[in-house]
Amino acid sequence: MREIRINSLLECPDKKWIGSWAKHEDYDEYITEPVDVYLDGKLVLVYRPASLKTLVNVTEEDYKYWQWVSKDLASDQRGAAAGKEIVTGREVRTTKGQDEFFRLAIKGKITTIEDARTCEREGRSLSPSTFYVGKVEDSPYVNKEEIEKWKGIYRKTSNPLEIRAEAKKKYVDLRLEWFNNWLETTWANSEDKAEAAKECKKMFVTKQPRGNTCYSNVVGAMDRSGRVPYGRLTSTTKKDYEGFTRQEPFYAEVNELLKETMPENWQFLYDRFSQVKDPRYNLFGTCFTSVTVNNNFRTAYHRDGNNCEGGIAVLSSINSGNYDHFGLVFPELRLGFHIGQGDFLAGDNQGLIHGQLPMENESLDAESIWFVFYSRERIVNLDSLENEVCRRSFLDHSKINHPEYSTGEKSWSGGWSGMWSSDEWNAYKSEHCPTASSTNHLGN
Image (cartoon, rainbow, N blue to C red):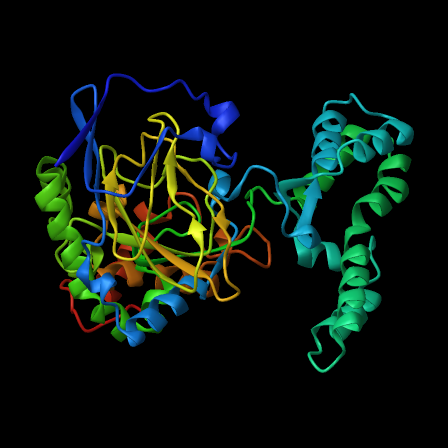
């Protein structure tokens, strides 16, 4: 087995590299043969081409399943991996100039309409920030009737394409008028302009940043978060649970090859994730909890953010049509890797910057579906899937039975601070939540 030994990483400052695109000049060697890569004596990457037989010999049925999975969700939550320059979702985004206006106006550093317009005009590029569509369309700052009219025209598939395209442009432009209309009719006439800016941002601008939209989806388990305080199988997993379980030989083969090639790393993950409270949380006995599935999604330079600390990710792909490159580059190592059908690349995707080369000379039907196996840190903290579903049902229960905790917003999820240690939750849990798991319940 060939070994590549590297003493130290090339300096690649995050500010310059993260979110930028991989180029051919970022690597000294493009790897297509089996190799182990060591950094300062530690094994950090393992590459075995065409070693995953379940993918090399993928059936038409399984290919179609993964193709469907990869396109079942168009995600805008891939952050820097989708590129730092925002180019999608204009119809729901603020601009960088608008963001800068709010920042300065709230501090009282912009007080005239001329300065406000200058700030907005000088930052026309799109921002990761978005606005609440419903609140904007219900506000006095747009013409809702006109918006609905043009939306209907562009969404009517029987209309000619050129008419639909023009209608969508008018629809988007009308919706985006909210900021300038608010600026001229409300902010410009406010006695306390800083407070007006603060209230507008609170009312209309979301706190959740959104990156570029791409085909990137997840099957397997997801842990709790502040916004979604219950564990679950992903929506796509549940939509075709039979298809998900049919891939068990694939999950097992990836697990076994990692055990063979990086035994210490595998043991670390297995010891941790074999303790989960439901077999569906670890892909039926593997050391992984989840698989990200991308379709023709060229990732910009990034580090994986959801892996458990000290974890290892495994990448592979299935493909159709013809194309060149689209491989993975680790600029700090000055190495690029071909990721063809059934290839196996395991390594520290959390610590090492990595990103994809462009797909070149592609045919019209070129398609590359990538798999990223990883382990989510907090999955080990989840209760059985049935009891996690019970947590979800308590939110719905709270919206009806505990309005005293409501935020007053239409979108209130039913949650409140301290709810999971409250007497209300403990009473609901004792009455409704099972004490044992059932492997037949999908948690719908």
